[in-house]
Image 1 (tube, rainbow, N blue to C red):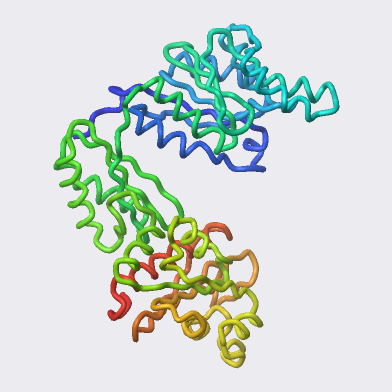
Image 2 (cartoon, rainbow, N blue to C red):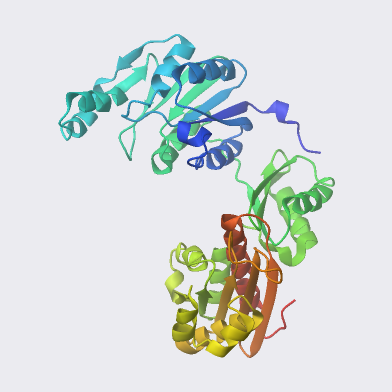
Amino acid sequence: MNKPDSRRPVAAIIAVGTELTEGIRDDTNGAEVARLLVFAGFVPKRHEALPDDRAILAARIAELTASHDLVIVTGGLGPTHDDLTREAAADALGLSLVRDPRLEARLRPVRSRHRLEQAREQVMRQADVLQGATVLTPSSGTAPGQLISAGIGHLVLLPGPPHEMRPLLAEALETLAPGRRDTPWILGCVGISESDAQVIAERTLDQHADIRLAMLARPALVDIVLIDEGAGESGLDVATREIADALGQRCYATDGATLAEVVLREARRRNLTVAVAESCTGGMVAEELTSVSGSSDVFLGGVVAYSNRLKERLLGVDGEVLDSFGAVSQEVAQMMAEGLQTSTGADVAISVTGIAGPGGATPAKPIGTVWFAAIASETRRAIRHEFPGDRAGVRARATATALDLLRESVLSPRESFR
C-alpha cells in the first residue's frame, strides 16, 4: 500500500503576477516547483496564482504559512513598481525589511545604469530582506531569494524567471531537507490518456508496498512517477518492469528519458539517421530533437514547408496531388516524406501535415485532422489522427505523435505500421 500523504510535510506554491491571474501569461514555474518538492520529500497540497496586490498576497501568505510546512512564492521580487512580494511577506509575518549590505554592493553597478533616481531606488529595493531571513544569492539576474521560518514551517521567496528561480530553489531545498532527494523512477508514456495510464499503474502497485504514485501529463504524453517510500531499489525495479509490460508499446522509456532522447538513442544504436518534414507543427518536432545535446550525429535536419508552394519546391510534392487531395491528406504526407528522404538521404524520414485551427476545417477534415507518413528501409507508413483541443493542443499532440512515429520507425524499420 502507498503511505498516506499525512506522513510527509505539506507544501503550498504561490505564483505572483496579475498577468497570471488575468490569463495574459502562463505560470511556467508551478509544475517544476511541485515536482522538485515531491523529490525533496514534500507533498504539494496547493498551487495558486495571485495578483500583484499587497493586501491579498499578505493575507494569503499568512493563511498558508499557518497551515503548511513550506510555502514557496515565485515572482514579485524584481525592481518594478508592482513587485510587492517582499512587502507583502513582511506584512504577513509582522517583520521589518532591512537592507542587506552585500546585496546592496552587488546592485550598485546595476543602479548606475539608470538615469532616473526613482528607477535607481527601485533597483536597490531588491536588497531589502525580511528581518532574520537567509539570503539566497542569485547566480543569474538581480533578485535574491529569501528563506525564513514562518508559521508552522518555512517561507521561501523566489524570483519569477525560471532560470533565476531554479538554482535558488535547489539551494533552499538543500537547506530545508539536506541530502533528501527521492530519486524518482519515471515511465514515459505516449498515446495513452492520463486516466488509463494511472489505472494500469495502480493495478500493479496494489501488489507492491511503500511506493507512491504521481502522474504528470502533457498533451499526448504522460509520465508515471514512482517514488520510494520503503520499497527500495529492488522493489521499484520490479514494479517499473511490471507496469512497463502492462503498458506495452505505449511505454517508451523507464529511465526518465524524453521521447526525443529515446528516438535519438535508439537511432544511434542502430546507426540510423533521421529527418523530418513539417507543416502544421512548424518546426516543433525538429526543436524537440535538437534540444537534445549531441543530436547532430543522428538528426540530419528538417524542412518546414507550410505553404503548398514550398511543399512543391522543397519536397517535390506534385501540384496535381495537392489540388486533388489537399495538403492535409495521406497522399501529400507520403510525398512529403519521400521528397525529404530523397533530398536528405536519411535512413528514416517522417512528415506531418494537418489542420491546427481555428480556421481551415471542412466537414471531411475537421480541426485536429493530422496526417503522418514515414519511410524506413523499404517500408511506407501513413496514419491519420483527429486530435482534440485548441491550436496549441493540436500542435503539441501532433509533435508527440510524430516523435512516436519516428521511434517506432527506428525500432522496427522493416515492419508494417500498427
